[in-house]
Image (tube, rainbow, N blue to C red):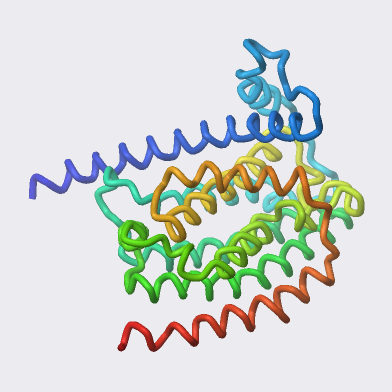
Length: 305
């Protein structure tokens, strides 16, 4: 009986520490992105603030959080204000699945939670776009929604593939399964497909149709400024870091690989041009879905043998 409060305190502490470190990681990941894009384009990134530009994210955060909230007059105020908070909360609650040995509860159905939350983020995108009451924001939100829903199907199927290999649903077991042989080597095409799918899931270049600068100004977050924009931004980057962590767990079995995977996001952004929207949808439904289904079908009887 006396163990329970201790466990609760330990769990609370580890959760708070993980959340704080993730927010810190998000801040400096944006700096890494700006630096990387700078060197990709043969220029220096941010290098004025502090010592070679390292405190830049802190200055950005300060600037964003002291800015005034500007509300569009015609916007639907309550959802408009709530959406960034909800988005950030959902992005952070994914980190409950972090396969650390500090967390007292390794979530037994972890991947199920991941699939549920990542399908809920669609609603926040739609709410952000719709409550802004601006046509460009709505366009961006609708496109992002269609894209996320399409690629979620493939994402779930690929995840099922690795779940069938492990026959467990928590990330720690999946990681331990990978320590014998990296599942990436088992089926390389599926790994490449997974990479494309997570790029499309997180709305990153070459699939950043949610905020296609050339067409939709800035996408669904166009009317947000200050803290609201900061929250949406932090949610996006937290999702990117989570996806890279998940990739390193599922495909390589070591958490060290999550940094190179996160760097691949930046590399893709620096290198690849934006894809065409109809081709993106065709790719999801006409090539990725049949392929992942076929792979899953081939694998399903294997654990029974």
